[in-house]
Length: 482
View 1 (cartoon, one colour):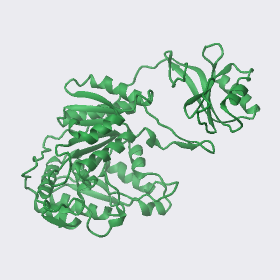
View 2 (cartoon, rainbow, N blue to C red; view 1 turned 90 degrees about the horizontal axis):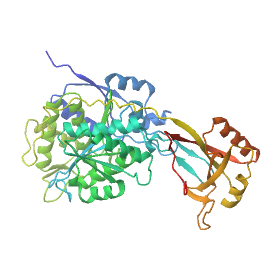
View 3 (cartoon, one colour; view 1 turned 90 degrees about the vertical axis):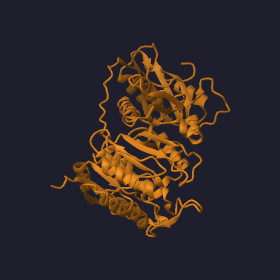
């Protein structure tokens, strides 16, 4: 009786995507992977047919049924209105964890860091990648950075569980909590809380700028790095590049129910159809897929054959080195070489074993106790071009029929009233903070009354943000003197 095959959804993508997918699937089939592919079309053709998401609505059914997505890179058309399919898939399917192993393959792939061997685990659903942007004035645009406690807890727990499952000794957190004290500050706080539950794993924190510098200079000091969405996107490409080639890296996007596996590089349309693309990135993503679906022995067979191919100097042009490489090959020939070495072990690299691969890690975030929430003021954002900060402050201070009074005005985050500096450059976008006159909490009606007065005075208010305290602690960034 033949083993039960695992249904997976496959997308050949754009550019070099079809070539590297053909090579990858041939290798998996030759290795004995028990897969039942369902092919869907995504990417440029679908975008141009009128789908802003790059995928037909009917194809979501395949993804929801198989719950496993092996995806080649795609091309997103230039211009506004087209959504990133990667971001859409990650958020729609709840793929909260992006996992990018990064390893050096020296001396066969040139690198200054032969001992590099780390994993970057990036939060995948929040941060600036939610894509909530607005143009608010002639001069100013905004992008909202959204961070949630459940989102932080899920990705940070996943990082520690991953480290424990794969015998990694240290988890490092990267944030910018010295500047973004509330959003990145929450991520850092949750990291410190959860780290205490894993005394067997060393934990540390770095500010993202110096952390990135250390990653580029001393990557050997890191084991698992966990960070927010934007930072993780940037540093994972840095790590892949200093390891030797972005084209070698695979990626997993893992959720509680579904998972997506891909190469980290793009569709490379400039070399599409020439047969020279390196399939290693997608193949390494597929190896992660095999481990995820419980076919660890096949994953090890493929991985070890791939390592043997690399160390025997059979290389595609992107990593070919005179004096090191033995044979320059194309996409098909590289796949043939890996297939020929199935069942062989690497001689220079340490052989890989996935026989005891962990089960998929499922995370259920805790629910913190509710806090006493009180409305204490409102930030009103104005589009105003009629004068300077002092003139605006004087006009707003004359609004006497409101239970709120003006406390300060900022422009691009810099306090400009009262006691602003004349040297400060200002745009047409003003944040005006109003708080209770008596220092007590207010009702929503007070905000509505204030907006009515501003409207009557001819002010163009473009946005409001309520100011709350939680158990008496401010739930908003404080200005100078607050």
